[in-house]
Image 1 (cartoon, rainbow, N blue to C red):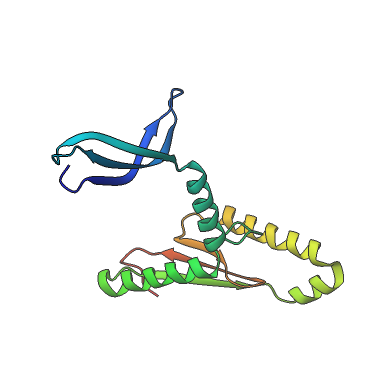
Image 2: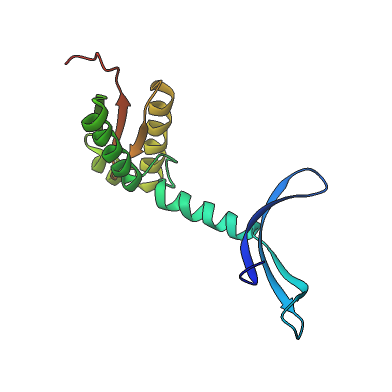
Length: 155
């Protein structure tokens, strides 16, 4: 009302009950004396933008082959774990797994077989680990996880 314009993202509801994001811009139209005569608005559906943002976020943070966190997300989570340890004295365990002789699998059976092996390893690790802060593929044949420990954990 005071500035003559407003813009922002709103969450709207469709007839079927599902929600979608929309970007709304509202401008004041004034009469010749400066009084408010009308409000003019422009509404844009943000659904496509949200989908693209989510897909981009996924590609930036997850390994497309194994669907695990990638090195970037792992490094961010490791930094957070270190900060929690320094500030709140919350210990954690860092586990790194490297598949030995993986290059031989690649050379002997080809990329498809080695990709499938990586997918199976990722699936088994995901199913075997109960509670982790992050499980990631951090390199070609390297996996790592960060597991929060209780404050009374002793090495």
